[in-house]
Length: 102
Length: 281
Image 1 (cartoon, rainbow over the protein chains, first blue to last red):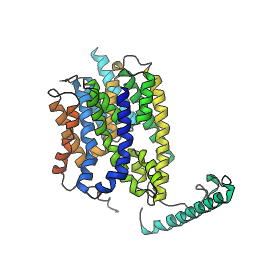
Image 2: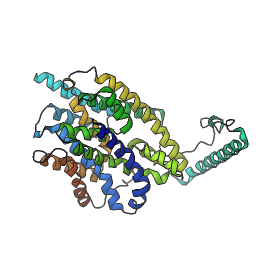
Image 3: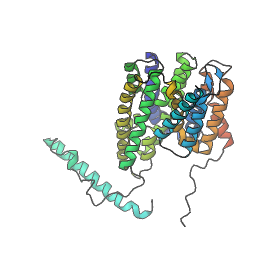
Image 4: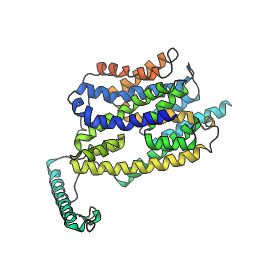
């Protein structure tokens, strides 16, 4: 990570909380639709990040062992497995398939 | 839970607590500031008027929280070091940013070939989550700018989820900080351990660590995806990114995926936020 990004992301993570609590909060809570929309942003954006990490190689779409790991992870998240179980299973499935595939 | 009978002991304990606080201030003003320490108030463990409340953080919850943040910290450090960051830089970044999702989003764009600013923008968008968490936490805390600011700055998913279920502002604040302590403990131990581990692993692809990165993110937003509108927003966001990825500069597909929110809002007009309570019989 570059120094610029560390500084900017620190401001993003801490600053947006203060803005949320003291500036936007009182205004936002009077507008239920906007509040809902804001609450849904992470779902959309984080899923986009997940898709890119699972299916992209540079700017090409590829299907490889990562997808199998993610399918297992998704099933475990659905069953409310603990974080550490999800993460380790995804790694084992992906690494295992890679080892088998040579 | 939440019946009228429950509120009696809560307010009684609340009154005693406030009373003790006032006494403490009085003693402090009298020049014996250090004479009355925290531990000398009514003992929570033995106090017979224990508040009966909504979900509190048990020891097991505390441990689970710490272990979750520990594993998240380890994962993030290993991925960061794998991306080429030096140990010091990776540790400092995670210690000051303290936001695995924003850091993951940043890295994802960089690994996709995006520029620094595109990656930072993705990290910002992802960090809006914290602003929203602070919005829902803040009004439930006791009044006072500094206390609210301190709590808002530490708003994460688990501590806000536990805190907002508490019946009184005092309990909201106490449970919030207890949960936060568990998270902090896990996080800092985790990034320290991850920094060491990251230097030992060598070829991380062989260990399947590139799959750990998206799996961790999925586990973080799992609860959001369980809501109907959250699920639709997530799926459309994913489709938008997938379709645009080969055609536009890296970073943009992730930022444009926010449009999935608009689709989710139109698709689910009346969200069932309050799920019907399980039938009593």
